[in-house]
Image (cartoon, rainbow, N blue to C red; front, side, top):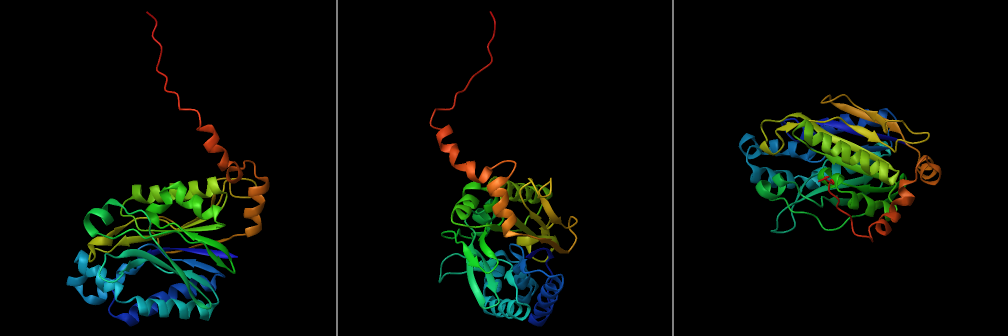
Length: 298
């Protein structure tokens, strides 16, 4: 299959038709390159806050509610495009409200037959906790699709190895890591986390970031990143673990061919067997960790 990861800029939109036209063009571009699985970034849906006007987009709380009210339109659009092109799409994540509670950060997976399911972010950043009051979701899901078993680790989630490992142990072969980071350091954390998840699980990790400036929406006003598709740096895989990568902060798709057979093969006969040897760690920790200091001669 071919996988496409978006390096996606946020725009101030004139109306809903402008959003439809933008997303339609992006999907057509990736599908035209032969992509079977398209991945959009974390909080890519925040550009919908502009549909409420400048004052709404500039207000942290109002922007959450404005974006959330467009979920029916977003679902219909992405489901239609997935069906039209015969592809699977991880849509841009955004706030989703449960009744009167606080919103979660939700990413929805679409297939040619419609909505497959959703994944809510599990571990919230300091900004989400302390300023935006976005709530963590409950539980992880592996999606069994025609393209393989897919798990989703949204941005900060990619930096925690036990989340990715839980998905892999439940059968995931591909992990999707949509992100939104305002600094190069933040982008690097997600990149390093995603590459580490690909290494230790001997799987493919797909990193899709928001990029560029959106000064009209303080929640996502600065965005730094490059889209990439990572694999284990091992036999018959790129030595740096990078299957494809866009240039930093340049809009577009990173596209790479991925083989589930190659994932199975490296897990079975790689130069190293991180996936298989993961289970050896608890035994190595049964003995307390020693702490030794330097010896000084009298």
